[in-house]
Length: 251
Length: 240
Image (tube, rainbow over all chains, first blue to last red; front, side):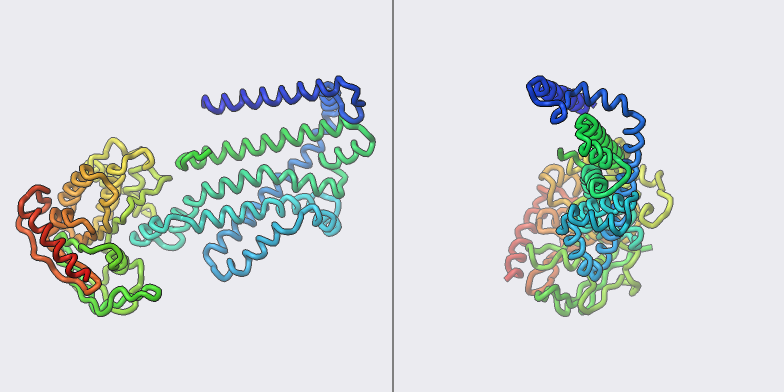
């Protein structure tokens, strides 16, 4: 508890320091449309609260759906590959390839296929997190201490019981690191999707504000996005800590 | 009812390119402590895995001395304690019930934990226990299933000398009346604990002269020390 409190204290100090630096920079002759002051951004946040919260909700929905779908797909594929060497041989190249394609280049295509709505952004988020989730979960399932499984077998455990009571639990810490990674990068997927083509969401707000030189609005949207990603990561981290109390803390 | 012995007939085992056993015959006496002693790499652990049903033999039969299969009559204790870190000590002891979807017999587990001196740690996670305590918990888990045959694969080799001696004594006491096959490379351990001694080398398996008295024998017993020396001599001869 003490260390988390100390961490919070450091975070706040760092954040305040950065804002102070930013504020000092705006005192020079840089024009406001290039670099708005913190006060201007705060005002933009306040005056457009309804507008921003509407679009925030859209982006958040895209991120959360993308995460849920990506984790589900990645988890199912990792399980399948664990139990079927055949599936592993055929699917592993696909998983690697999904990471080799630059998602930014794929975004216009996805918008073309799925339209301007949410589904293209959800698909982007899924694509971005699919690889970390699948590979970490697969690694975790594969690297279960062989003795744990041997012991279960000598006790007559069925393959289903071995999966439920041994493999899945032993793989949880690895899955946890995949989920943390997913929480950090899923927003990137959604925002890329919105930048390429959308009528709603924080990416749309930023694009719109940029076109009209409303840099304070652009900064406000960015600020919300950063807060949202941090909050998402922290909640995933907290949830995992609660769930996996037994794993040794390595960080 | 006497616990059955273990009967290995015409066992051949080839792992990859290496032929570990061919035409091996072996009888392990029921209701007694048998130590199987051998240098590293002769296939002690592989033999144990075959008997435990973890590795299928290339050919040959393994059964109880009563002719019935061993499946469901074996408890296995490996080189590591293999306590699941996500379970408490008590849950680890009751692991067999958990894996087979049965209700845990908590009274029995509590009794076993008391017997191995861990009743105060029932709710602790294995990570908080010392190496010796972890092996005690593993011993309680081995006893929980009430199997007549217990296979032990160098379970005490990672412990310090004092803890090892204590747990050897404990194991000898709690395993009375079981058929125990203990694999070890430690001649002193074999001499302290066993009714029957077997020595395994690349040339095959042969019996060593049995010791007097009931295990656990004192480590400084003159007979124990003498048979240790004889055992080492036999071991180096059979190792070729």
